[in-house]
Image (cartoon, rainbow, N blue to C red; front, side, top):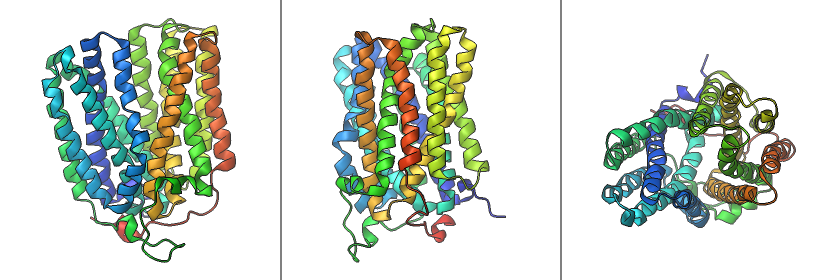
Amino acid sequence: MTSRSAFAIPAFRRLWTAGLISDTGDWLLFIALPLVVFQLTGSALGTSIAFLLELIPAVALAPLAARLVGRFDRRWIMVAVNVGQALALLPLLWVDELGDLPLAYAVIFVHASLSTLFEPAKNTLLPELVDTGRLVSANALIGLNQNLGRLVGGPLGGVLLAVGDLGLIVAVDALTYVVSAILIATLPAVAAPAETHSPEEGAAARPAGLLTAFRLPRLRGAFAVIFVSSVAQGMFLVLFVLFALGPLRGSDADVGLLRGIQAIGAVVAGIVLGFLVRGSSPRALTALSLFAFGALSLVTWNLPALTTDIWPYIVLFAAVGAPGVIMIAGLMSVLQEHSDPWQRGAVFAAVGLVSALGQAAGILLGALSDGPIGLLPLVELQGCLYLLSGVIALLWLPRGAPLTAAPEPAATAR
């Protein structure tokens, strides 16, 4: 019997391996660079600026990403981005005092800008490498390697920074991008989306602009889910630390433990959904995972009324990683299945834009915890937003057969 796991496809295995390597490098930098910024500035504001800089390109460059991904071979976009990310790290070699901080901020901005191109290219290429029946498996396995990269790269970034310096991290991270670029370059060639035909035009379609994605009625529910759940995620980034140090009465070590432990549930979910589960409905997966997200969040926020012992929270945070992977796998599969190839560049550029705007709105909402509203009403709202996302997914995500199916020859290419 033919395996229904996307991992059975050699081309996908190469893409997955490239992602695991580059994600590990991303987490090296994600952990180390904010620490370096904080060491240089001694300021939480300076560190917050570093995180905010990562959101700006997803908004500003979304129209460009839609056009480029729609016009050019996605493989070579991803190769060029990986090479650019390796080169963009080099200025960090000269960062060692406060006056060098603009260099660190510039690297963060350039990396975020390149990621704005990489993610839509990857998500539009995936349906060309695997058949429709394996899209959920493929997206779950992509989520798996992101969390494996987090488990490996996060601690490794802290260790390398402790035993060496930022230069050592730059060298290791740059190497991961180069290796990833080499693996992606070996993927089978597929037609650029602009070379496909639009049913409406009956001729070679121009790359779809960003607004094309928002004009697709069948995908509006998906964008609504992404926005509302991203607001909840943005709120979590602000409220989690306040909750852990406040009502939970935890320590800095507890904050790190609870954030890191989420990867366990995510890895388990990625393995189960990527290798074992067959015939899953992307719409149902998305809705159920969001309901689970909301329920786990509300239990967590309200549990201090019963206990502040750390162990129940370790269990809850380990569990909450699972619906995160399942939600992303379901949503990405919905978007891939229900868009035509020539539209996907615009669709996934729009995903980055909507997600960034939602997170920014959530961060601003989370900041209200310092005012008269206080922390507890906002954490309750955060959990309820996930439940609302689940309702939207259940009622508004597209039903029925997908528009297109990936060609089988690409699924077996070596």
